[in-house]
Image (spheres, rainbow, N blue to C red):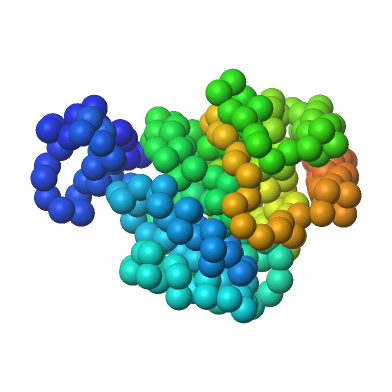
Length: 271
């Protein structure tokens, strides 16, 4: 696995071989940032302003915007890879972006200006230090949120507690879309939902797959322009449905394991 180098002065100066993060830090794995966006032209300047220059690529998944989202993105980041979303929903948009991304590390960033791109270095550092999945948390020590009402915090806590108890996780946050992971994680988890519940599904399935997860303290800011497509009750119920479905699947797998005989080498078989 690629590693963080302690000093740029110790790294070769060949362009493309190392990507300098700061005067004391450089990385070798290419990092792709996936941004699902629909009618976010006013917010993209704030999003792109905080993205570090050393990332490998930006993949903008356009959900059939009717404003200048695509044009603004191309002006702000001339090399941006724009992918048109064919389906609907955030889950579908992220899946589309993951398929288009070419980096070894993939970072999920919302397009509403609520995420600080300067935090990406913390996510990448966790991954190159041994984690498979770096999960943003607004409630870990050092994190915070300006955007959650008391009711949403209560709902997030209840759903997070349910996931921890049912799947053996130790999350402090559940429904947050700022995450990063190694590409190989996509081979171990299937993303078969289309809505806002996609983050919860990912969080559950990385635990079920036995992947190493590290939480990253993150601060969520207020959406700068426009209104969110998130609906607390509707999407909360969708998240709960995912949790119950995954729990049911887990029970069924355990029943199958108990019913299946232990398999060993067949007598006389050449090994």
